[in-house]
Structures are given as C-alpha cells and as structure tokens.
Length: 305
Length: 171
Image 1 (cartoon, rainbow over the protein chains, first blue to last red):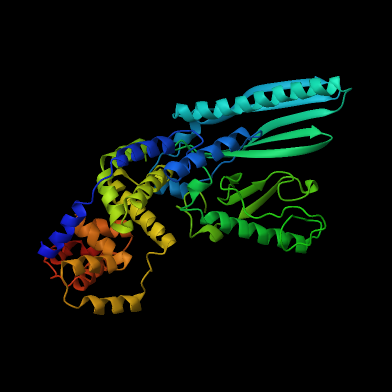
Image 2: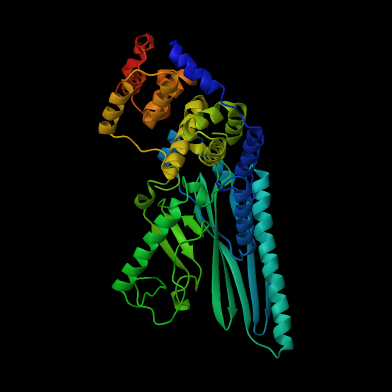
C-alpha cells in the first residue's frame, strides 16, 4: 500500500473511541427495540430526557386509541425475502368492555387487545396501555357522574372504541377514539401503527431522517386548509390565509409526535382532534400528505409509498 | 430480517462504525449522535435489509447517509458539482506535505472521500463499496481513481485486480 495512504489509515485507526459508545449503542438498541414510549429517534443525553417527558406526557393524555395499519405491498414482501404469513397470527380483539347506563348517564368503553406478537413486551405494553386508558376513562366517568348527581343532575356520556383500519400480512393499524359528551361533545383520536413482521411500534419521527418533516407537513396542511376553504367557504380553519373573525390561535406547526396513521394506499394521514385547528363543527380532521412532499426526508419508502 | 441480528451486528462492530462516522463529522459528540441515529434507523428500517449477507454494506450506508445529513444540516459540507470538483482537482495538484495530505482528504467531495475511506480504511472490496453507495461498480472505480489522483497518489494495481467484477457495469 502507498505509504501516504498508510499514514492516513493510521490516523483513521487511531481515532479514539469514547467510553460511552458501548452504553450508547446498548441503550439505543433497547429503546429502539423495546415497546416504551421512547422508541423514536431521539437526540442523545440531556435532549433525550426532554423527549421522554414529552412522550410520557402525550401518552398520559391519550384517552383515545386508534391503531393505524400500514399496508406493505406484496412486491415489497417478496423483495425483502420475508414470509408473508408471519404477521397473520397477530390479531386484534375486544379485550374488555366497560359499560354503565343510567338515566342521563351513559358510558360505553371498549378496550382492544392485541395477540399473536412474538415481542411479548410490545404486546403487553399495548394491551396494558389500552386497558389502563379505558379504566381511567371509566373512573373519571363514575367520579364525574357522582359529582353531577350531587350538583342536581345533568347529562354525561363517554364512548370509546376502536377500529382496525388495516390488517395485512405486515401491518396492523388500529384506530382508537374517545367521545366525551358533556353538553357538547369532544372527540379525541389516537393511533397505533405496528409493523407486524418486525414487531415494532412505528412513531412519526421514526419515519423521517430528521425534524424537517415537521415544517414540510405543516406547510402542506396549511396549503390544504386554505385550498379547502377557497373551494367551500364552510370549510373553516384557524390558519393564516383565511380571514378570521375571532381571535383564535392560528395553526403553526404539527407536534413532533402528531397523531397519524398510514392509509391502505401507503399515504401518511395526519389527524387533528376536534377544536385543535378548527371550530368544533369541523369535527376531527385528517389531512393526507402526498408522499411526494416527503420524499427527501423519508428514511425509506417501505411504509409510505 | 431479524432485528436481534442487527442488534448483534451493531454491538459487535460499534467501534468501526464510530470511526466511520467520526471520519465525516470530526468530533466525538456528533459521531455519537450519528451512531445513535443510525442504530435507530437500522432497527426501525430492519425490513429494508434484504438478506443477512448485506448487513455490513446496508449499515455502512445508513451511517454514511446519516453523517452526510448531519453535515448538510450543519452546512459544513457543500455538495460539489462537477465544476467545483475540477477546481478542487487543480488545487490539490500542488505538492503537499502530510498535513496537506490530510487536508486534501478532508477537502475531497463527500462521495469521493467515502470511496477512499471504505476502500483503504475499512478494507471493503470495490463490489461492496458499490453496494454501500448504490453506484455502479464502474463509477466506484472512477471515483476511487479520481480521488487518488486528487490525493496525488500513485494508482495501485488493485483497480486492475478487481476488474473481474466489471461485469456489473451499469447495473
């Protein structure tokens, strides 16, 4: 070998290895493979702690569950050399139902359960999450009902449930929703997207190389909002570009872990809860983001086509 | 592709991956960030690995792309077009000391440096470099040749000895 190359190589080989490398790799692996709320591509160290808090807070706030599935094409499955039957054993079933019906008080809560994952930790995590969310809803409902009765009575309703959006050999998509009725109703949607073959929970950040997706998606949604309003003035959003009569905070950008699922066509669908970006009559809003808009920031085209 | 297998691979070869990342970003903090992000991407994108024998080239590609992304974000790296490449070529044609040799390596456009690092520092065969970079074998050879020329190094016989792999030309 050329002595000059040799010199360069020696310099390369003597790049010192930091002590923390081993721990970092192990920790990253356990986070990426585990089923905790920290599975995204989170920044390291101090920044990681912050990301975890945000993830934990958003989990705690999740009343409603919606599991979204990802549809992988047979072509891809073939290319990847995997057995298309592997994921077929994974199933969603009605794990538990809480109901309470009494005069003007009505609760109907359904918890989905997932079975058939080899990754028992992930399965347990999801099932425990769904159960505890519904249990919490039930307890809140009972407490609210007692308070209302004491105050002279009223109407109270809570309804939660789930939908299997996509269930292919590779992807399971479950959508979970909660409708709270106290006078007017509020609706919250949450989604879980599972890669059945690799048995991992897919998060929004994990689909992208870096945080540029936040602005790309936000701008696309703003454009769609304005376009929808122009086509039909009844479609109204709190967004710049539409004349506002009330001083509401305008939609700026999506959250890093904004609710999402992936449609059967392999397109990213971003979801906003009722009142999040528009008046209540607009209900829960979803925006389909063309994959073309995201092509430069996608980690791969496996999930999004 | 089993993510357990990927986990074993990235654990075993972490030091080599770290050096590769470091050779791009030039500081321990960023290199660790690149490794962390690469490991995440590998686990989450495990399905993009077609078969176990490609794991090395597959993961190298993730590390390199992640490192280049980081540099792009930090704007340390300006992707060179052909014109910039020619200018650079002229500059490094001047005689240089060892220090300049390092500088020249640093100044190589990212895609050229990748080829040099993979071939001479990581000992990857040219076919594997083609796999990592997603380039035709002929392009890899051209880049290695031009890189060496830029480094004012004698081209060694290895390009010739690797010629039998040339049937993948243009694939």
